[in-house]
Image (cartoon, rainbow, N blue to C red; front, top):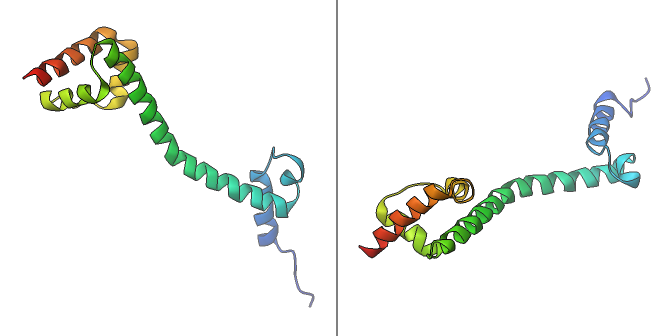
Length: 119
């Protein structure tokens, strides 16, 4: 009985890799050997950058809050310290939203932080 070399499991695995490599440039989308390397690297980057995106957003929020704080005459670090002393627990995402969309509300929060620092 002849030995089956290119069975369905192998074919299915290769089809899966080539499907993931769809749209890649040159041989990387059609040649299994190069597609396998390209897909492995792409999946690694995707996994790593999903973690990095969270830090990127946090940095962006801090930049926006800092800009709004300086318009109110206080630095970001002193603002956060004032919020802590005032017992205000609000995350940076919400603060950044207030700073860009609802300026009056942010001014009120900044005023509370300033008064907490003075005491």
